[in-house]
Amino acid sequence: MIHIQKNHGLRVTFARALRDAIFLPDAEDKRKLESVLARQTPPLTYDEGLRRNPQMIKRHVKHVVPPPEQLFTLVSKLFEVYGPLKDAQTGQPLFSPSAWKSAKSVLEYIKLGYISDPPNIALYYPLGIDKKTRLTIYRCWRGTNFTKGGVHRPIRHCMPISGVSPRHTANRLKDYTFRHNMRTGTYNTTGQHYLGHFDIHLINKRQELLNSSRIHAAVPSSTPVGNWVNGNLYVRTTEVFGILPVPDDVRLASGLLSYDDEAPPKIQQYLAKQQGTKYVVITVHTDPERKLYSSLMQTDPSFTREGGPDWAKGTRRWNEGYANGVDIFYKSI
Image (spheres, rainbow, N blue to C red):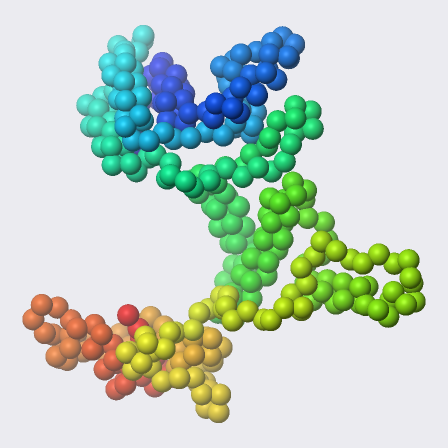
């Protein structure tokens, strides 16, 4: 955001001050935490607790990024105070000319409301109550750290290094999604880690059996199995997870024929079936496709017209006139 020399003596101090100017603590959460800190030995103020144990503050105090007009005043004043301050050893100011330029851009983003929290959207989720302090434990949804560290990286590790088919990939992702949702869903709703296996069909069947009249007749004192939503007792969803079918309007506009179970394609059959098309819809990747694309770009009126290619017309011409499911496949825009 703003590049500051690593060896500047005020670099860390400025970063903390900027953090505190942008993220303002919730007044009620702060008051409760101050009460807890005051009873410690030795007693601590909120600022001392923030310096010594910032993770505790993060865990128990919600923070908000104020509206643009308030945030602009706080941050601009901070820039004015810290920007000209010089390093004791080098004599260089905290903000170089390029840093001042970046700072002005930051203030413009603040004015436009790009930094402030969106109104009426909860960015914190209560996980439970700390047994020792009796303070609420929060999880913050702001930013992408949970997505990148909690989802993207583990997905890479659940895949083989190479040689993965679309079907293999889709099934791996479905399995990962279910396991991830079971773990995070249980923790977010109960504060407890999920314990158990991930065979959902076995869990459903077990619940049906243990809750059946047959079991109750044989063991009258048996307790029904609860705390589980059995999907077998509900109408199956029409939602599609993984590879989505090509919408009918897109398929018709692009000149794509429907998938035919009686005459499935010999190449990428699974992917074509999931897409609902006669041949798989895939990017230009074979040598015949590259040659055809080059030829059409030079000779076909759909691609050579003045003002640029008519991609919709050109795509339809490709699909209806050249796609064969062997070395030339369907395309879409």
